[in-house]
Length: 157
Image (cartoon, rainbow, N blue to C red; front, side, top):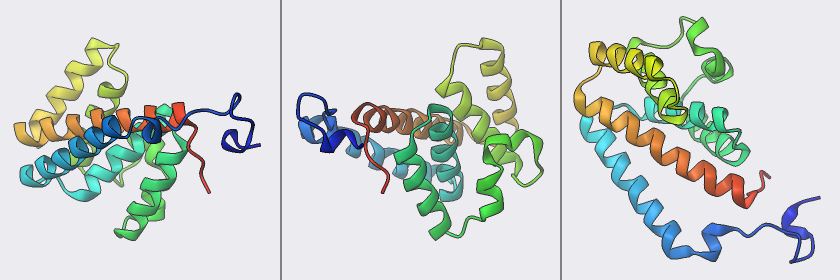
């Protein structure tokens, strides 16, 4: 049973609809981050890989559905999407993609300072400072969207 079809006292609030001005600000942030990423030369494929990996880590079904569709429409392969959760164990991702994915993971779960240091060091070898900043901002932003969708229980149709 979908939370949105149950009684008003039992269903979750779609916080994006309940507080549209706050959600609009998040959308504006996302647009600014997309611009920063593009200006830094961070390929749209990398941005979507970050969106998907962070959404996997957070268990956000809505964002996984949305960004999988976006990635496939943009020409991403089903193989790469299928192995994304185990990206370290494959050879299908470039060094830049791997660096961005590592940054996304330590941004999503920043508790391990050694992993943070390793991710930053690896990123510095293949990404510019602007690309590193953009990758982290992409991860920060999708983490926020994940929380909105998870807490609202946005449905996947």
